[in-house]
Length: 433
Image (cartoon, rainbow, N blue to C red):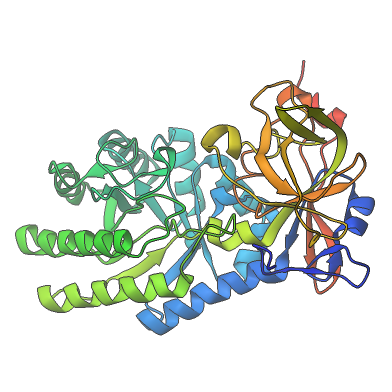
């Protein structure tokens, strides 16, 4: 049996190991529940993307880490060291990155409802690109840039009309989406013409993102074709030159044995052929290519370790195994009915003879981590690891029921260190008056 995470193994003592560290020992040292992540694997994932950018686009582009997947100072410092750019979607993410010393010129600022204060922060700090979502933001940004004596380099978020085969909550490329402006109804063309006449803005590029957790090549190829055709049409019709094409992210990862992701560099190779073909056919320069992987950088590098506090068998109905975490540290089941796999930390390759629901401790019936999980026999006090939790777990975590948020433990070369400390009860009331 292979684990869904390549950085996992079984140690000499029979326990689950991540990055050369015994998970049971880490649980003893840092407590449970806790996020544990393999730093070396995160760095290698960044290098896979950078190598692919070099191979298929001759280095004419940049790979951005979509930091909404996991945002903390430690991650931003890693991204700086790995020569990545980042995208941020809020003032808080931007502030964290800047405080971590991340170069502002390699930050792309996204969001469908940026506030004036957030736009001012971006302008004051010299953020590299602002990805404009709508006409109201466009007008605000032009006004603020003028008041501050700045010229903002902008991209536009475009809806290319691609309906990716994924959960409805994470499809973003179709016309019925809160994000961006549409190709289909002429909205995208009109807003770019408007921006081209604004004194304080420099239209640099266009952006699209069709969704997340996508396992097919075709939607990405089709999106690239539509975007390149749009760039060529803008040049032919209005002599507007678009120098950057941001193709977003959304590459699927392996949460369960049933998931079949494509190697990330294969996505990039396939899309590069489309970009080059249309560039030649329409006689336009090859644009500077931007990509935004997030989940695929961190998800399969992390697990969450829990301790079992109760095993409740309801004869003829269901067995509940309750752990010391839940929807506060992983809300993805209650949001999307997301599927995960779990293993017992002691002897993780033991035969899975039990069907049980892994439940959290929150006072909420929907607080489930895995419904009808296949597990070995589990008893009170056992450690259980839920796999592939390195994206959209910490970043979406809450203090529901006033439960402190978890620490993030990074492992590298058989050693561990804290990236984010565990919250205390004092942290919970720090802002209470």
